[in-house]
Structures are given as C-alpha cells and as structure tokens.
Image (cartoon, rainbow, N blue to C red; front, side, top):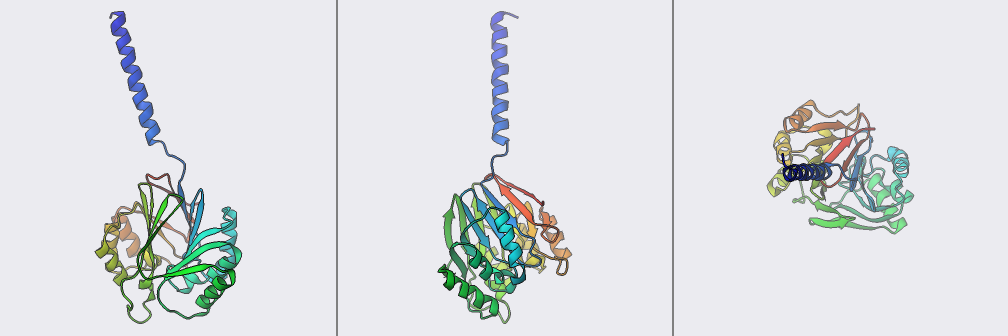
Length: 278
C-alpha cells in the first residue's frame, strides 16, 4: 500500500470515529429539564412538577397528610410554588391545599369552574384569601409556559354529569417538555374520557392514570390513544388499583408504577422519560 493510500485509510478511519463519537453524544442522556414527583399520598393525588427555575403542585392530597407533603416539598428544596392546580374538589385532591397555601408562597391557583361546598373547599378558599393568592376558576381550556415547559389545561365540556359525578369535572393537564409529553388525567371517568378521546392529541410517554386505577369499559380505548411508555397509578393498600386497569395498561405497552409502593419520580431531558422509585 502506498503512503497516499495509507493516509487516505487513516483519514477515513478518523472520520468514522468522529461520526461515532458525535452519534454517541447525540444519544447520551442530558440533564433533566423537568422532574415530576408523584408522592406516596395513599389513594390521593399530590404531584410536584419541577424545572430548574419553577415549581408547580398539582393537587394536595388529604388534609391529614398535608404535614408530610409539606415536609417532602421542603426536602425537595421547594421554597415557593409558581402555581397550585386543583384538578377538582374531592377531599383527596383539595384536602391538604389550605395547609400548603399557609406554608409556602404561591404565585397563583387554578381550579375547575364548578360549585362545591365542603369543609375542605371552604378551608382552601379561606387560605387563598388570607394569603392573598389569586385564583382562577377555569371555564375554558387554558395554556401557559413556565421555564420552558408548556402547560395545556383541558376543562370539562359539560355543566352537569349527574349526581355525585364531580370526577368528570377534573382538569386534565398536558405537559410538553421538548419532545417529551405527559398527561395528568385527574379522576376523569367515562364521560370525561370520551370527551378527551373526541378532542384527540392524547399521545404521551407518561400518563397519570385517571381515578386511582379504577377500571371502566372505555379505559382500554383511552390507554391505546395515549400510548404511554410509563403509567403512574396513585393508589393505596386499602384502595388498590384494579387488576383490569393494570392489564389494559400493559396491553397498551406501558410499564406501570404504583405510588402505594413508594413515590414515583419521572425525569425528562426533553426526549423521553426516565422513571423510578427511591
């Protein structure tokens, strides 16, 4: 082989190595741009959404669990919340809100636009007034951006779903962080899930399973539309998720995570989700 041929060969090998290095760098995981923590709050919801420059809490669990939730927020280094989103007014979603509002500065609060009077809702409203927190009852779909994360909040389409059917008033939150998406479905039941299916645009790598893993006939269709890689169920030992729900999620290709076993932490670098439990 001539020296020129050897030189060309070495150049080709060097270019190949550079290409492989670039490819490896492109595939290497980056720093998280968003972290979602689904707290172990029993059969209740409390979800922290963090970025390097923001913090949002979705629901606040039960009243009796509020001290533990506040302690968990403090351990996570959260000194203030940019927003508190209450998906609906059941006690396992709004129960701890008053104590959270009293404990931490909060930018603003978002809630569904329907009436409910209970000691938990009354305490929540009193805390908002006392701390001077602006609140907005959403009667139309709402979108905002915080520290590079897009929040799209989807509201219920109907003013009445039947007696004791307030789960279907749940605010449903779509999060977009780069190419990674998450769908937080509150306690949505059949009527609300049908609305979401009709609206479309549900595909998300991460799903907060609606209504603590309760199963209904529309669940498999909903899961198939979302196509989650990871599905988080907020359940408890006393009120566990239903086996049919877990089976339907696994059929849809999801790895299922249960908060009754521990908190669930999901991170994204803007490309996909990495999920685990401490």
